Length: 269
Image (cartoon, rainbow, N blue to C red; front, top):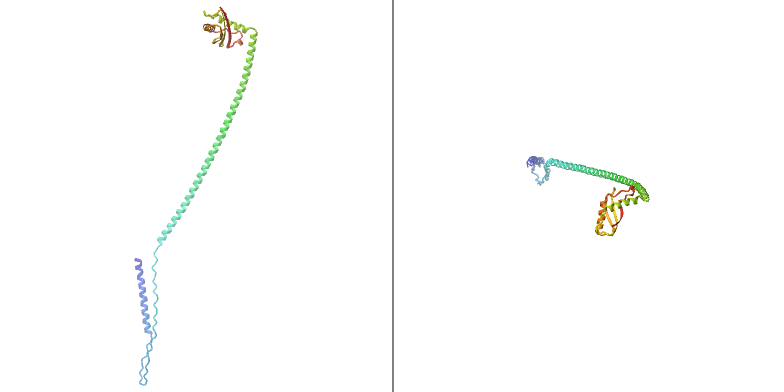
C-alpha cells in the first residue's frame, strides 16, 4: 500500500500538467482566430451581408493519458529462494547419486570378498580332502603291507611249526618203534593200579578205559571214564586212583609226552 500511494503523486501531477497544456492550447487558438472586419455603413447602398458562420473549431484531441503501470513487485528474494531450493534439490540428487554409487560399490566389494572367501574355503576343503584321501590311501597301504608281512611271517611260522611237528612226530615214532612209548604207558598204568583201592562191589576182573588229561610235568587235570564194567563205586575208585597217582611218570623221550593219554586198566581181584 505504501508503494501505491507513492506512485499516485507523480501520476496526479502528470495529469494536471496535461490538463494545463490543453487549456493553454484552447486559449491560444481562440486568440489566433481572425476577427471579422468592421462594418462600414454607406448611405448609398445598403447591403446586408450575411453572417458567415465561423469555421468549425477543430478541437485537438487531448493526448491520451498514458497510465503508468505500477512497478512490478520485487520478487528477487523469492527467485533467490527458488534458485537456492533448486540448487539444494540438485545437490541432494547429486549427493544421493554419489551415495548410491558408493553403496553399489560397497555391495560389489562385499560380494567380491564373499566370492573370494567362498573360493578360498572351497580350495581349502579340496586340499583337506586330498590330504585326507592321501592319508587314507597311505594308511591302507601300510595296513596292506603289515598284512602281507604278517601273512609272510605266519606262513614261515606255520612252515617252521609243521617242520617241528614233523620232526617231533618222526622222533616220537622212532621212540615208539624203539619201545619207549610202551615202557612209558606201562609205568603210568602200574602207578595207577598201585594206588587203586577196589571197593567191595568190584568183580573178579575189572576192565576200564579212561582218558586222562595231564599238564607238562605229569600233573593230572582231568579224568574221563569212557567205559567200565564196574558200578559207580568202582568208577569213583578208578578216578581217585588216577588223581592219587599225580604227577604221572614222565617219558624218557620228551617227544612221547601227550597231554591226552588213553589208559586201558585191567585189574584182577
